[in-house]
Figure 1 (cartoon, one colour):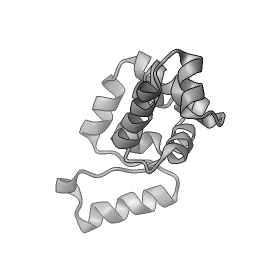
Figure 2 (cartoon, rainbow, N blue to C red):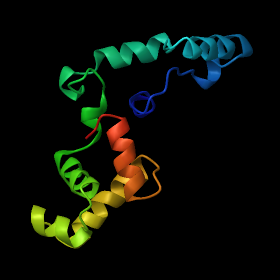
Figure 3 (cartoon, rainbow, N blue to C red):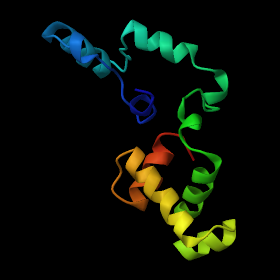
Length: 124
C-alpha cells in the first residue's frame, strides 16, 4: 500500500470492501483529488515511525536503502555499470544486483523505468 501511495495512488480499497458503492465513492473522491483509504490501513500508516517518512511528508525514504539510492543516482546521471562500480567501490556484479533487486521489488521494466519511478515517488 505504501508503494502505491508513494507512486501517486489517490485511493485504495480492500478487495473485501470493493462493492459498487464504495468503488464509485473512491473513484469520485480521486477525481476531486481526495484520498480514500480504509480506516485500518490509515491507522497502520499513521503508526509507522517518523524515520521512515520522506522529508517532504511522503513515505518514500524507507523504500530504498542508502546503497540503492546511491546506485540509482549514478544511473540517473547516465553512468554505466562499470563506472558506478568503480565510483562506489563495488563490483559490477553488485551494481547489477542492486538495480535488478529494485526493478523486481517495484515491478519495473529496466534501469530507466527504475530512475523515473524513484524520481516520481520522491525516493531520489
